[in-house]
Length: 503
Image (cartoon, rainbow, N blue to C red; front, top):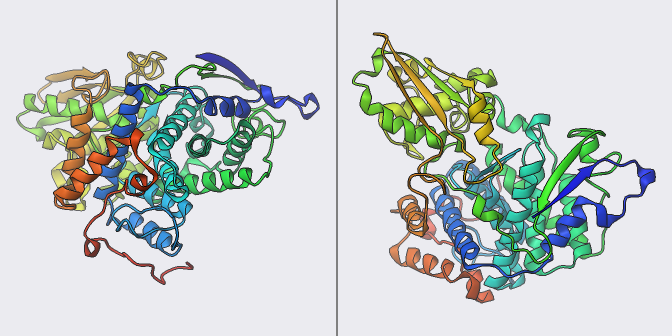
C-alpha cells in the first residue's frame, strides 16, 4: 500500500489531474490485477449475505415502496432483476439498484467497516450487479467490479471522517459504487475519474438521517447513492466532464464541507500491480443491529446468567468508544433513544435499548426484538432507563487501530445491583468478527441465509441461488441474469406497478 497526501489547492495552482485523489482512485480501479481465491471467496459470502437480508425484508414498507417505484420503470429487453420478483421481470438498472439496495439495507443486517468514518461496503453490490445484468456482463466482470468498489470505499473510510462534519456516509459510498460500475465495465481511467468526481459531487447530504427520530430514509440512502452513481457513470461514458478537482479544489468538498482549506488527509491505496484486498478487512453482522452493538449483544448473553432478578439491577454503565457513546449511546443526547414508541430505525441506534433486550432475552432477533410489544414491555422500559454510556480512551483507541487484527468495537459493562454487588465483564470483538471467538465462514453465511429465508423461498430456489453464487467467477451473462432470489409471486406485496405516486 502507498499513502497519498490530499489537501486543498487554490485554483491558480492548476493541480494536474494525475496528482488528484479522484485520478489516483481511478488508476487503482482500472489496474486490472489478479484476484486471489481468498478475496473471491469473500465476495461470494457477501453476495449471499446481501441476498439473505434482502429477502427477509422484501415485504417491509420501505422495500415495498422502492420496488413499486422500480416496477414503474420496466424494460422489455435486457434489464435488471428485483429481489423476490420472477427472473423474467426486468427494470432499468438504476431502478433495480435503487430497490435492491433498499432491500439489502432495510434490516441493517449486512456488512460493515468502521475507521475514521462508518460504512456498509456491501451497499455497492446491487449497483454493480444491476448494471452487469442490463449490459450482459459475466461473473468475472462482476467479481472485478465488487472488489474495486470495496477497495475505494474502505480506503476512503480509513482516512476521511465525514460524521465529524455531520455529513452522511453516502459521500464515500457513491464514489465507490461508481468505481465498481466502471471496473465492471472495464472503462478507462479518464472515464472512471470523471464518474468518481461526479458521484461525490452529487452525493453529499447531512447526517440528520441518523439523528433524533430516525426515519425509513436510512434504508433508502444506499439506493439513492446507487442511482446517482449509475447516472454519473453513464454521463462519463458519453464524454461529459465533472467538477474538478472535487477533493482538492478551492471550492471543493474538502474545502467547504469537510476539514477546510488547511485539511491534509492521508489515503492508503494499493500500488500499481498490487492486489485489492480491502474486502477482507470488512465484517458482517450476526445480529440485526448497529455494528457497535454486536459485541455488546454477545456480552449481554454471557452476563445474564449471573443475574437471577433483573429488577434488582440498580444501574448499568457501558464503557465504550467515542462513536458508540456519541452516536448510539447517551452521549447523543437523543431522548428518542429511550422512547418505547420510537421507530425500529431509532431503536436500532440505541445501545441502551439493545443491551436491555439482549440482557433480558439472551438473544437477538431481526423482527421480534424490535416489535412494539417488546419495546413497550414495562420491565424492559424500567431496565432500559437505568443504562448509560461513557467514552473511555481504551475503546476509542481500539476503534481506530490501523491493524485490522487489533481494531475492536466492544466495551466494558458494569452492572451494579441494589445490594451493592457489581457484575463486570468486557468484550473487544463480536463473536462473528474475523478476529472474534467464532469468525463467520461460508457455512455461517449460508446458515444466516437459511435462517432469514426459511418459509419464504423454496428449497429448490435456495439451492439454485447458492449454487450459482458459489460459481461466481465462471458465470455467463445469462447466469448473472439469474443471480437473484425469487419468491412465490403472490407472496410479494405490491408485485405490480401501482398509481400511488408520480411514476
